[in-house]
Image (cartoon, rainbow, N blue to C red; front, side, top):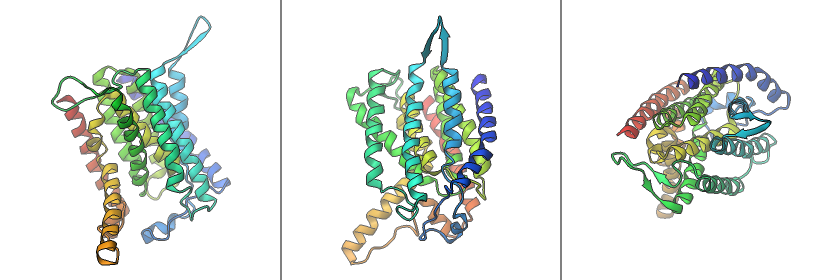
Amino acid sequence: MDFALILASISFLLAVVWGPLLIHILRRYNIGKRIRIDGPRGHQTKQGTPTMGGLMVVVPVTLITIALNIYTLLGQTVIGRSILVPLGVMLAYALIGAVDDIAGVRGMRRGEGYSARQKIVWEILLALGAAVIMKVLPLQFAGQVGVPGVRRMVELGWAWVPIAAFVILSLANAVNLTDGEDGLAGIIVASAFVAYGVIALLQGQDTLVRFCFTLVGACFAFLWYNAHPAQMFMGDTGSLALGATLGTVALMTGQWLLLPIVALVPVAETVSVVLQVLYFKYTRRRFGQGRRLFKMSPLHNHFELLGWSETQVVQRFWLVGLLAAMAGVALALW
């Protein structure tokens, strides 16, 4: 654990140093956020703020992880296979997000990048590929699930693969929906990685512990520049990558059943969107005109339109997320 905390500090320092250069590059190539006109009015001032800030997390985490897991023995290089799974998922989803971010700033769909249908195909394929790889390797808890109150892991066999793919896919998009306020997604994801880092520590998965806390340090560094008023945004490059990686880490601990608790805020954000769409469609069919269940979804927009300031939304959501992460660790010990 002491080494993991040192890695978090190193990751933080590397990312903080890399931050100003990244902001300069993004500004130079006009990779700035386009704000949706139907969003809260206060968000219009964010127009043009550099996006793709997820690179600030992905780059140092990748470099540190590779450096830590390469050992030279008699001229041969051996890389720890297990840690390549979450690292590979992070890089693959970061690539999807980067392509979408670039498409968004180039004005393909009024700041929204590629359509959901275009992205989801690649996301599904990557999620299924990652799930199959984890099952085939096999990793320690691949094909299993931990149930609170049950001391032994429950074996699911190959039925675990589509479930694992769904976990990765859903978390990627849940964090993507959460990334709508300055500092919100970064602090929520960092808290969740701390929780799963502690769970991995209790399981003796030292490599995974180091990976989790390396991510935490990089997320904190990103928050240095994403704190209100944000100097850069995470973009899909970061939100998809971090969400998918969180899902992968949860699967590697076998405690993915706790994700609705540990990642309570992203899950709530996703549920709010689903309920909003379903209710709108139902009322349109029932009454001839669609009605809204929330003032606006995702959930953070609803509270902002209720009169909460952006800072209040972020701080209160973080308090809920932090308590949820603590509850998740407690249930893992149960």
